[in-house]
Length: 317
Ligand code: PMV
Image 1 (spheres, rainbow, N blue to C red):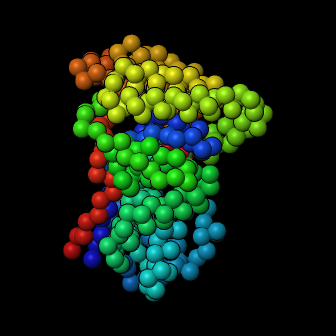
Image 2: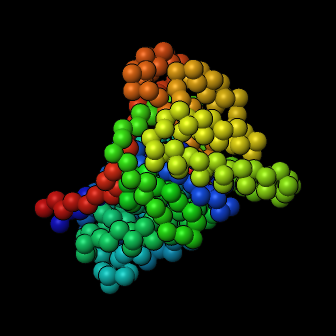
Image 3: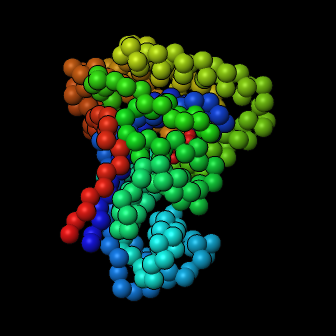
């Protein structure tokens, strides 16, 4: 049997970085997905192929010895093989529509889709189990991950997420029109998260004030999302951007892009770790196309909508 699974990327509407330190974040799954196709093979190897290249390890190889971008996916494959007492390897093919290192959750979506696809070769995957495995895999390259990205990728929709608590879906029937603008400077989440940690250690009081302000802002943002109050959501996004700038995770280029889109949107901010990657803006449905036209010669930009399905699994015979 060949198994196919897919999982969505994400944008962070509110709370990136602060979520690592315990503040609630709000994330939204988007209609850009990773698809993973897998099948059992008759060798003793795990083989991975993606648009970024190919790599093979023996099923007996220690994960600690792997030092390449496929490490989380080898981790997943090995763990499932061992749990199922399977004596051969698997072939894995990863196809992605999500830009890498851009704050759109590509690595989490890859972990979720890989875990779901390989698990499905042995038994019907259960969402909470896939989430646990995907977070564990992501920790092999990003030990401090809050787990937020994997959670929204598994369940889809808009979620409130707080570390060590249950996530909560923000139910909405409304259509949200976001645009994404890619600065094309890729970032390392690990490096930016470490930089915020350093800022926290060196500026305890400032960090505590920001932490409290962000927590209050998120309560207001959640209420405005529930009421579909676009003006207030946009203002909260712009305020969140100011807090992120104070944390030191923005840069001149991101600020320039935000300025460029601001007048045609309700609000705009970084999404994800920052210092590169993408910005998101909440737009009016009727202004979206003209805004995209206006900026298209300068920046790669596209509209995104909410993905409500989360991870999906299929059997291909
Ligand atoms: O840039 P991304 O997609 O890796 O998002 C990182 C979000 C952080 O809050 C900075 C880290 C985390 O684990 O939540």
